[in-house]
Image 1 (tube, one colour):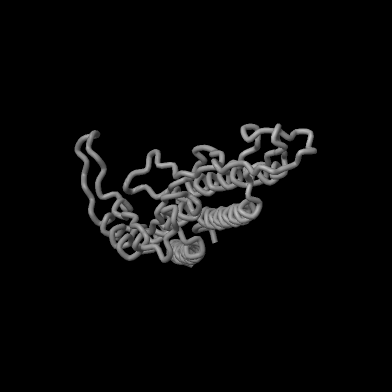
Image 2 (image 1 turned 30 degrees about the vertical axis):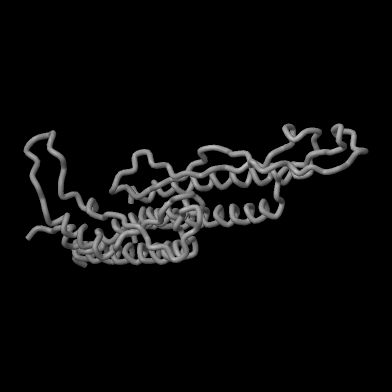
Length: 131
Length: 139
């Protein structure tokens, strides 16, 4: 029986990836809160996580160095545009309060994923030491 | 996790853009009472123009920094004030004051400082998350 880190870590490694991507999007929204014509974007977490997991299960062997790498996890996470609550005259659709709330929520969820990963690592370590 | 490092670029760009805006507000407010002898010489309110940095942004990329693409001067007419005893007054006895709207500038300043604070907050949170990520598996 071989030890697979992918299996041991489960969904949490993918979740962390998607969370960090979402953090990046939300931070971009906040950074562009005053930019005319900027449209706020976000990702559908459920769809993105599903895609990240799928991407991992599909492996394509590259037989030539010029071949493009496919099946990379995270490539299918298409950002989507937010439906604005109160669009402004300058074409900006960022609602700073909402983005901030989403950012904090996502940061906490990121920490939760980190905690889960830590627990998995602790479990692995205990298994390896065999105490 | 490498994504998170990009976040510093994004929030940093927003900080510098907002500080340009604060600078413009400060200079507008400082010059709000400067008197000049002709409409051409009068100080005009300066307003920075923000735009997203779309260089290298593809359908899959998520980080969008912001930049200041230029500083526009307000096209509003300078305020003419009748002051025949003023040493700078023209033949008709008028002096010209800048087209700075102080109330507008104050609102602009508050908006800029709130945005600045928001982005500092984002950077702090990101820093904490990164530090925790670096400690992954050590406890």
